[in-house]
Image 1: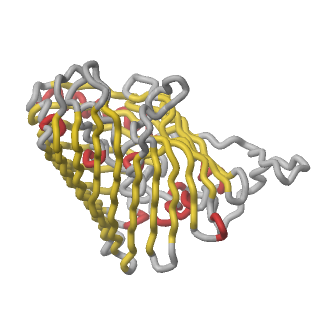
Image 2: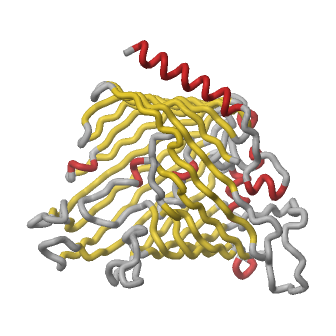
Image 3: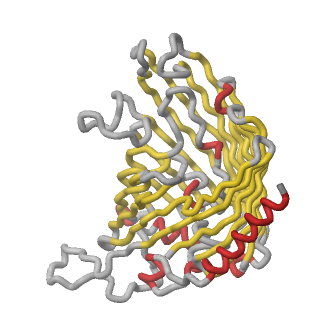
Length: 399
């Protein structure tokens, strides 16, 4: 077993030296001719506060002008981007599992994304990405929205399109670890209500007091294929509210609530209505630039859900709780070339199939600003798969 693992690690390090020679600059950095470090810390895709401001301002910097961004066409109402902004993200890993069967797997590429985003006018912007390869499948479009920034000359933004319901909390797509934020992903029977991707509208408001508000109205059934040109499977919508408050320069606390209703369809009955409610607090603590602590607690309650499509009866009064804690260590703050993460996931429910607990240690090293190597260990206790250990080593690159 040790010899097999040694061979795997040798291949990983050989591949790492090849990856080190790739040097490129993603779309937004190209636009403003700035380093990725301006918005990302300690490494992409994680955003630091300046990057959050940039994204929330319609992908423009108030203190920087993008040179020759639009094509002059003699029409003030027309915005033609001179060089259409594109970027690619590619991740690749080697995975080794033990404790639940010994197995090694080459997972490169693990994912490939095509991303684009930018200004269409002073206040109008867009963003989308297309999964060209997600674990050997073409997953299609996930994030895709149009946003209007600073409505009524206030810090009031509106987004219309497709996004993750949990984005106002801790963005899954911006995490540094391979291990997911499982607190946002439980699948309760055949319910389509989720805190992951959905279609709808999101409104954000920021105040000078450090208070921010977010409201969402979404279909409440994910991003399925349209049926007779309708994406929503029923007449109901889901509603989301979020408030957060900055306390000094080191603490942010927040509260989140989601209320949804859905019609349950299975092969035997289509007259079941499920009422779902999710709520919980969160916080981010940054005592020094070396440490960042993120914590999330959520409780979800479902009134009535079919466990399977062929179930004779529904399960009632399902309660699911989730905890996420993530501690990030950056020895030199924004200037760190390496970082460490400790993470804990815990999901418990009286619907056993979603029970999950994991302890994760992650280490990353920047070969370039846009190429990092990563090694990760997780001890997992999964109701469906049992208890096992997994090790991942690989790379994350953007260009």
